[in-house]
Amino acid sequence: MSWLDDVDEDEPEFDEADVRVRPNPKANRPRTKRRPAHADARIARVLGVDRGRYTVLIDEDGPDEHVALASRARELRKQPIVTGDRARVVGDSSGDEGTLARIVGIEGRTSLLRRSADDTDQVERIVVANADQMLIVVAAADPEPRPRLVDRYLIAALDAGIHPMLVVTKTDLADPTAFLSHFEGVDDLTVFTSGAGGMPVDEIGRHLVGHSTVFVGHSGVGKSTLVNALVPSALRATGHVNEVTGRGRHTSSSTVSLRYVGEGGRGWVIDTPGVRSFGLGHVDPANILKAFSDLAAVAEDCPRGCTHLPDAPDCAIIEAVAEGRLGERGAARLDSLQRLLATFSG
Image (cartoon, rainbow, N blue to C red; front, side):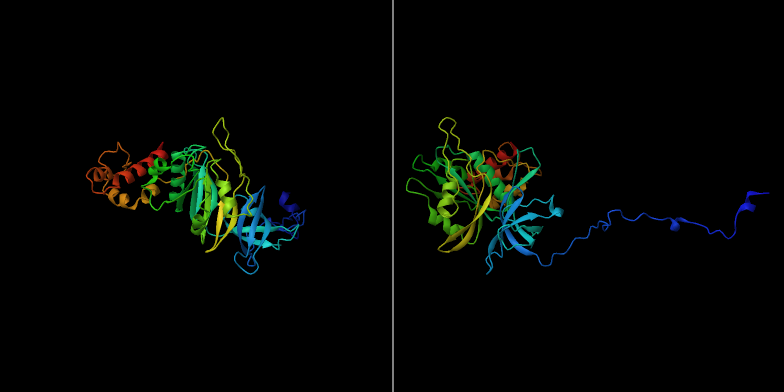
């Protein structure tokens, strides 16, 4: 007798569909990549960041303008959120004590001021978002001005599409003429000076109205003093210069956005910590030349890959300056361009 004779024809057959699946032991819904639309989100300006908490301004310039505290949503854990960002906020954004809203998205940015640890580091650090002006604060003496650091600030500003301005403090201690001559060829660089008579607060203030201006500078140059003069409620800590090292002490420890209110209107002052270096590993050198529009037009006749540095062969800009085709300021402008390019490449 064959084993087939033992098979019961009435016994049902089974397939994969009959396999029983154990129910979810935690009784929770399966994870999904679909995120809520947050149609009720409010737009807020990020004023500052402190240990994972974001101070935000809700309804900027609106009838319900107020400050609230927020955290970031889990899906934004890899998204940098910085001062100046325009964030989408949900939850309790009343700003009442003990409340905490949640940032669920970042609006498109108009600009990004970035830096790196050094010129070889491709990892960028965002300093501020959506600024349209940069005010570089430098002292004529005590501490001594550092043209190469200012060059780096200018490169970062030009790369980000931010209009640069420069204020020289402590001009009663030293004549800044020689220092300022280094920057005569930079397009649209607005320059202010101050001395023992005080800061040119009113003049600078007129340039802040309607703009978001990031203040940068070496420690000890008077940046926090200037910020306090422009925004009396800021109460930014001020320091002094070490008599032995000639270096300033870091007084501003975080980047913060402050409302400027002047006779002509309002604007934003973004104060940043003082730094002694500013890496440019993220910068596109082509953006430096674009800032010198007249030189960029001549550079179209340069050979491909031309560095425009003094040893560059057949550089059309160098030849135009040597022939006097760029006028009296041509040499100064070429010198400024080469100095910026050399700072970046070296």
